[in-house]
Image (cartoon, rainbow, N blue to C red; front, side, top):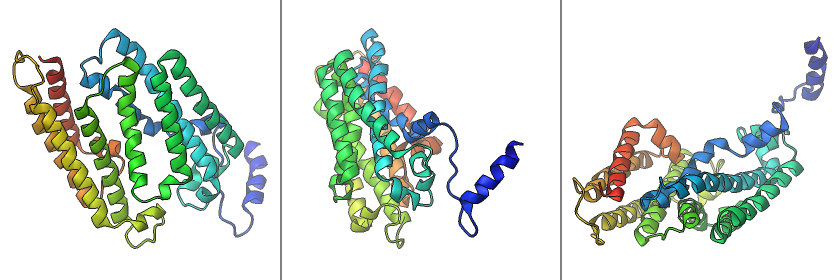
Length: 318
């Protein structure tokens, strides 16, 4: 009975000789959730970076506060995705892949996407000011303003687009420290900032290599960059990140020599090997999303775990 009633409607929508429109599947709530990009939420785990670097990750205060910070930053990121997809709905409908996004496919109406994004963008900083601290609220507000400016115009400005995306990663790494009142060291900021620039520029370089000769079909600004320039950027960023980390590891800083092994110095080896391993994929032009690169390559994941263990032992001075 159900099939016989839907078939004529589908035929009427399609029409003779017309391609099938993207199907409107699932509920409105499911469409909003998909638009919020759950796969991208793993990036927000960076909120633990500053507390972990300071050795305060497992304190009672951190365990109570960091999940909230993660949720608030995720809400801000979701707000940006919702507004971005609502703004680009018409362009996305002409794209072979993006036309399946819920807003472009009609599952989520454009006004609803704008309203949901605006609500999250207002509520998240307000909740941060009430539940965390004014500093966290200011950072979240700055993140929203910067990302919305990126969606509107900054993504079309050479170099600035790289800086904005890199700063977004750096803000994720900083917000946990601000929420717990942890001072952010210069080495932490240098290593994190240039490490993020390394991954962002490596991704852009990979996109430029893969779309060579396609006329900017995926990201128009890539036609303005040369692969040589993007290679220079990720190589420069990798070098500065390694230098910043090594200076941290070699700096005594008054740390007592009570650990079993010099974990700070030993962790340099794992860090450098991880950078070199990631650079293999960057050089091949296959360094896409950072989380995908790490999860696909078992060797890189293992190196990362070894570095994480050494770094943790260095921080707690075991």
